Amino acid sequence: MHNFDLLRHLVWRDFSLRYKRSVLGIFWSLVLPLAQLLVLVFLFQSVVPLSIDAYPVFVFTALMPWSWFSSSVGSACTLFMSNRDLVRRPDFSPLLLMLVNTLSNLLTYLIALPLVLGMLWWYGIALTPALLLLPALLVIQSVLIMGLSMIVATLNVFYRDVQHIVSLVLTLLFYLTPVFYRSQSVANGYHLMYTLSPFAVLIQCYRAIFFYGVLPGWLPLAFVSACGLLLCAIGSLIYSWRAHEIIDLL
Image (cartoon, rainbow, N blue to C red; front, side, top):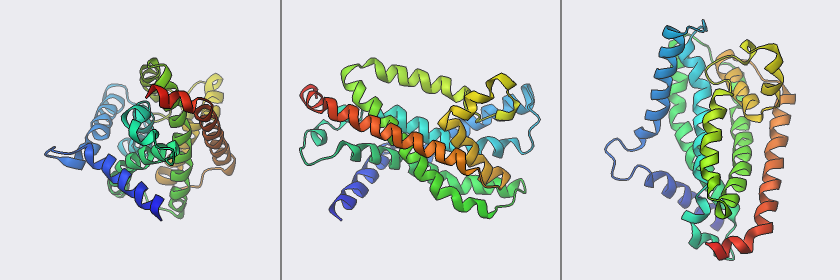
C-alpha cells in the first residue's frame, strides 16, 4: 500500500510539474501530436497523397501511442541524474522511476483518447469489441518502454552521448514505423523489417483495434511481449552490474 501511494504521488508530481505555471496547462500535452497530425495530413493528403480513407484518424490512432513511446524513452535518459536523491536511497528500487516515467507519459495518451474516439465517430468508423484489447496493449507497451528506459537511463550515467543517440534514433525510427503510412505499401524486400520491429508490430495492433475494428494476431502480441520482457531483463542486469558505480557517479 505504501509503494502504491508513493507511485501515485510520484506519477502525479512528474505529470503536473511539466505544466506548472503555464496558461494552457495539460492541454500542451496535446499540442505537439495535433501539430504533427496537421503537418502529416497536409503533406500526405494534399502534397503527396497516399490515398488512404479517413487519413487523419488513420494517423492519429498510431501517432498517440508513438508519442507516448518517444516521450517516455527520450525523457528516460536523465532519470537517474534528475532523481539522484531517490536513487541513493538503499530502500528505493530504480525500476520505480521507470514505471513513474512510463505512467506519467501514459496520462497524456489517456487524455487524448476521447479525441481519438471522437475522430472515429466523426469519420463513421464503428467501435467494435476489439477495443477491449486496449488495456492489454497498454500493459505490453509499458513493459517495452520500461525495459528500454532502464537500459538508456543506466548507460547515460556513464556515457552522456546516449541521450543524443537516443534522440537521433527516435527521429529516424519515426519514419521506419508505419505511423503515417501502411506497412503493406512498402517494397516486398522490406516487409521483414516491419515484422521484426516490436514497436512497428505494436503500432499495427493499435491501428487494428481502433481503425479496422479487428483483433490483431496473437503471435505478434506474443512477440512484442517477449521483446518487452527480454528488454526488462537486460535493463535490470545492466543496472545491477553497475549499480554501485552509478551511485558513486551521481
